[in-house]
Length: 416
Ligand SMILES: [Fe+2]
Image (cartoon, rainbow, N blue to C red; front, side):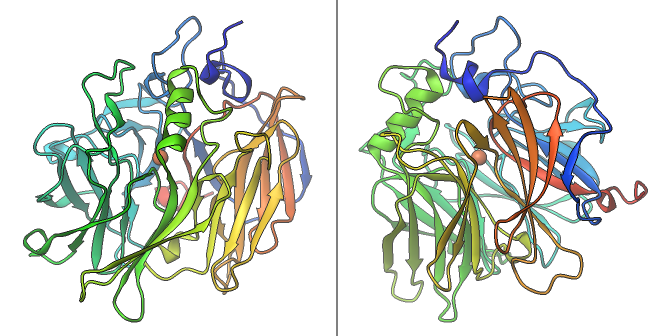
């Protein structure tokens, strides 16, 4: 029995692949849920103990174990240190995919689909110059823009944000460190300035790039960003301070002094960047330990009212696993508690057919249930977080990272 945290408990790797049909469903599945929920995570092969959780084999391909998306009819498994791996819609590996040679760097695991234009915006970062390159692919998947982002450094960049008129990069207090031997060469570094970079999306954007100093910290995931009615950039996301980062990092590498979970101490922050005055207002808007922020992606880049996330028990065991909903208009926070030893995955929002309100839709989450040694797909009503349906899965699905809902319509000829 190993004590490696990412090989035990909820994170125990699956040892086989199965195809299961005729699953037991409690409640009723909404008819518009016709498609694929594809989850990715790290799932080291039996007998393999990677030096870092992120070095473990991916559930879908290769070491691309962070996320999986669809764009232009292609399924792409993603990790930020490499190019994507293309998959068939039945999850067979096609191979490395570099956008026909136009991808000239690694690719972030967090590309953003602009809900207005259908373009895919993304970046590639590197610990060596050029540190940051920004790309746009058209709705069919052809890269139409590729630009080096000026002023970037070797700060770790896992995610970014997109508004209607700007691209927003965040450089936190975690930077390239060749002395870090876990295989992921980054570490907290007090000498690394924390900054937010704002680049207009216009053709001359790189020349108008600006960097704004912020308080030390590290943001793994952006919840959303938008321009408010005064033209200020508003950015929100869960962040960690030095202690929170170290608790997470030590879990990721299996070192002493680690958190009981990958995330046990985080703070959701809001930055308001006034482009006219150059000032940045920063505040903590919630101190619940959450990660995996999601939203109705029709509101990506626009002012959104509702935000979703997954909550974790804190380092003292207080709180619990759950799916969290924030109402930014009222300040209310509600939680669908998953229950003891039941860890929900990232809650993916799927709009309801004919929905009119931002939260008319469903949250799909796969719960790892240790007591039953099984998993269930929960379909929650995004408006009240009530459970609509439970699909019982015959295996416990390895807990982990990101995934996407891909409706059958995404593949065009595959509608059934
Ligand atoms: Fe991520």
